[in-house]
Length: 275
Image 1 (cartoon, rainbow, N blue to C red):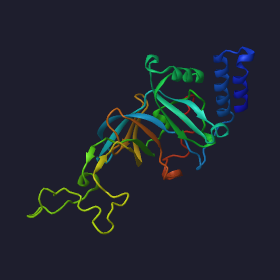
Image 2 (image 1 turned 90 degrees about the horizontal axis):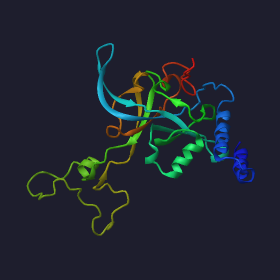
Image 3 (image 1 turned 180 degrees about the vertical axis):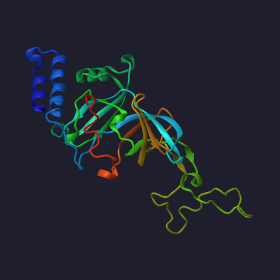
Image 4 (image 1 turned 120 degrees about the vertical axis):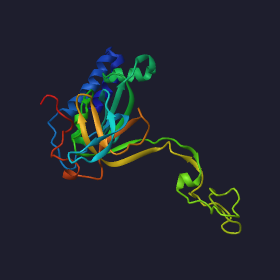
């Protein structure tokens, strides 16, 4: 497949083929590979994840009247934008994009890349590693129904930056005594390198510094509710990031089979809208 694509691009100038035709053949090759045979879910199958926008938190009540805090995650025009094959890239993955982007806000290389793939521009792109039986054709739409009510997911996003923080806030130090004799050092980190020995600060020493602003993953969050009309997920608990932050949502990696999904098999490779 990759050899065919390379040959087409190499012979484009000699044969006078239009770039759009060559790109369409490139995209159709991936689509044909993904649609060779109907995939069957196995416990070792790895489905793709989705990109969602964190919209905030609210509360829902269970049938027994228990109040649960949930985070609202909304999906906006999520599609498969590209395929990473083991033969060409050395691994199998899907590139997923969400939220349509205007052409005037994109660079020319990005516009050309999306046109060659035959899909519209997207604001955010992420890659999700999948098993070979879970590869989807380029342009496949992914909705909230990709997940099941009651299943568990992992959510990844950059956490909120806190700026420069001291040791008490950053590392939970208790601080120095608040009694007489301690002058203006109640929230200090204490000694770090001593004098004669070791006379240096060891690498990795917990000290004051920048807090937050790094990618964080919260694992094993339960999907409480799915709204297909609004394309919204209700996930139990809190999720990293601020409101309107793009987050990655995928099946929990530490759970398998019946512990992960309430019903077997799950929608595979994704939900079939034709059924």
